[in-house]
Image (cartoon, rainbow, N blue to C red; front, top):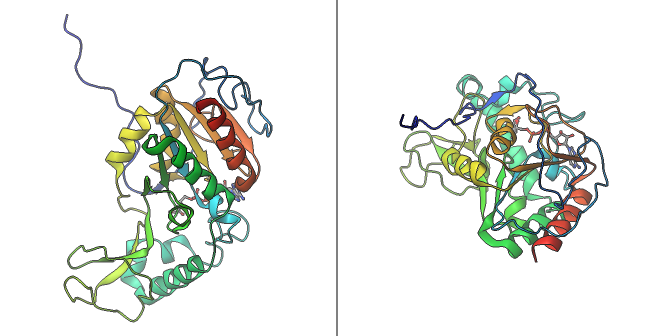
Length: 289
Ligand code: APR
């Protein structure tokens, strides 16, 4: 009998939606010797580095980052105490309906975030990921949910901003996505078509994130999937660790606190990103160089 040619692909939801947690458990063997190998307990901060990585070539790494990686640069996270949503209901500033209803409030909110992001600097976690890419090249892809530009300012180049960028505008008339560093509240004209129809190029709830095909191809093909500074509260990003795991990748979480994901990470370390990420990068480079 011919094999069923239909591929089985775990496909996370495409539009940006909050996660409703289910919880599936799984276990995996292998990858002995890999950075973090043996540290299966969530919360273990000082997992053993392990010995040489003997047989794994090539090594493709997908790094998913969230607000936590920029926290120590001074960018507030969304869901921690003191987070960005405090004082703002999500549906008042991060939905297309909010923009339709009250564009000034939404523009003012993102204008303030754009200005704040311009005044901070990348931290050691951003720099470590740029160092990883510098050593391993295009085998490292950083997928960020962050709309700040701290990864690129640290030197990352193979980078996807799946939730858009504060430093771009989106023209709702012609679809242009010009680079944009100034406020938008005064309705400046679109440089491409002249319409006064620019909004922040930020993906709101209910909208489609950017570059999903590219991201999913990289996630299913990667050997290691690392989640840094994200609560796993929003799809489709929240589904990527499970997707990577289902396709055989080793999964690692580096976060201030352990998160309650769809599947457990193979390795979960808790602590500040500026400490955990450089240490983890050192371990990876020690077994790859
Ligand atoms: N180092 C590491 N992790 C940290 C740090 C730190 N210094 N500070 C906070 N964190 C962790 C928190 O413990 C939390 O788990 O970062 C995570 C931040 O989670 P969220 O605030 O939910 O941010 P994020 O996961 O990026 O949100 C995803 O939701 O609101 C939407 O589109 C928005 O991109 C955003 C998406």
